[in-house]
Amino acid sequence: MAYKIIELEGIGPVKSVKYNTAGIETTEQLLDACGDAKKRRAFAAEHGMDASEVLRHVNMADLMRISGVGEEYSDLLEAAGVDTVKELRTRNPQNLTASMAAVNEAKKLVRSLPTESKVAGWISQAKELEPRVTH
Image 1 (cartoon, one colour):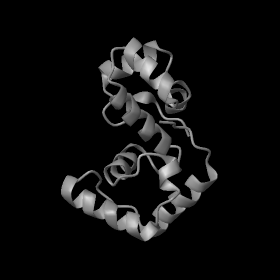
Image 2 (tube, one colour):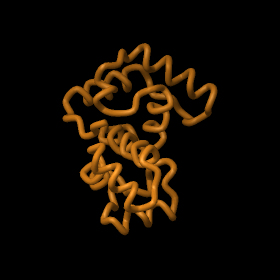
Image 3 (cartoon, helix red, strand yellow):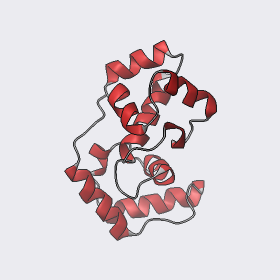
Image 4 (tube, one colour):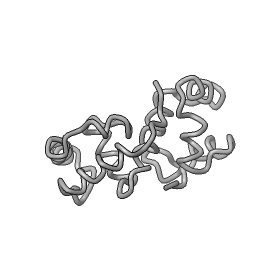
């Protein structure tokens, strides 16, 4: 599922204009343009952005390919140490659910935590998706 680029956490009007000027209006377009490390560095240099910030946006876009993972849950997953779909597929649902609860207790990122069965579903979906991010 593609989201508008401005829906990613940390992308406000100024950064969305930088992406839009480069023809990137959706999360799918971001993954196509910046999923590869070399392309990502080139994009960041050309558009006056920090490459690590672009990587963070790419990682969130990658996680948002999972049905049920939108802006808030992608941010929570990242805070819990899961940056990409490739990494999500290796996680244990019980451990990840507990980790996300602990992170949310400290950072208050989401109002409603996902259930363990929802997290298990995300992991199952991740196992079916091709990796889109390289480092």
